Length: 184
Image 1: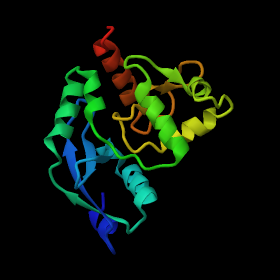
Image 2: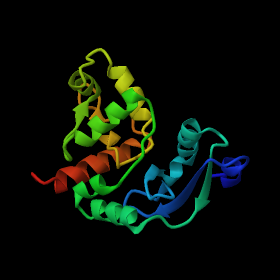
Image 3: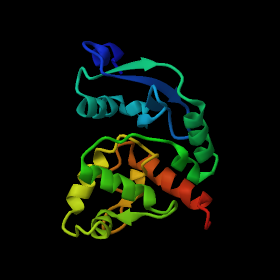
Image 4: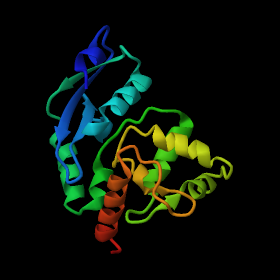
């Protein structure tokens, strides 16, 4: 990631970024000075992460500095990958986004770990049965990989579709959660 290009100009939001190792690849986590996670994505998706941050804060609306985040964030990710699936629920996030995106992201966090839900079914649950595509777009704009579990959405026929981190990671996350979900 070109940190210089992201930090040029007037700074509004100061973000610290830490890279952590996970069983499915390194992740970049960005948090603000108050300890709220502002973004999480896989290291091989730096271009996507940069685009999401720029869309959210503006090209010159933030600075991004490598460093250490509050230990609670890394500890929650570690616990999640060790099998305590609910650990990600402890991570405090500031989502931004439109009202509809926030509604979708909140609904994603309510999908039971170890299960998957079709885009259309989530749209129905939100009272907008004709909005499966809008749900898909909100899901794709999610800046919090794993924490807001967009990997739990699947195609109408149950197919694993639309995961920016790669279908292999989506499959791994769903299998991991199914193995460790409280009802498993």
